[in-house]
Length: 124
Image (cartoon, rainbow, N blue to C red; front, side, top):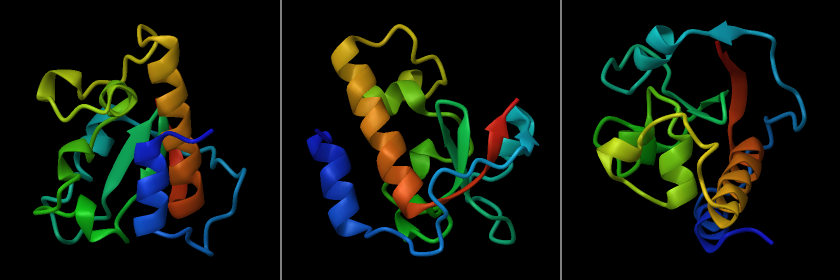
């Protein structure tokens, strides 16, 4: 069962028909490169990562520079998403110490993003 937050997001941002489910490019993206795709530079695409998978979230204005979810961009925000947190201290890739319930929430976010956004690579 999908978490309520991920369900709500899917209702607000319906699946993108251009997304090819199940395809993960072999492109390695460094942490520094990911940081450069935070929405601050209008000439660059906006990326965020969950569990090391990098998504192009540029199509959703909520991830833009002034968007509600911009706090998650340019980084792997796995821990924060699993905890449903917007606290800066939680905006890290470490998700292994999440509770089982939080890990399920995180997996729900991955599934939702796989339906809505193009995967551009993996954090290396």
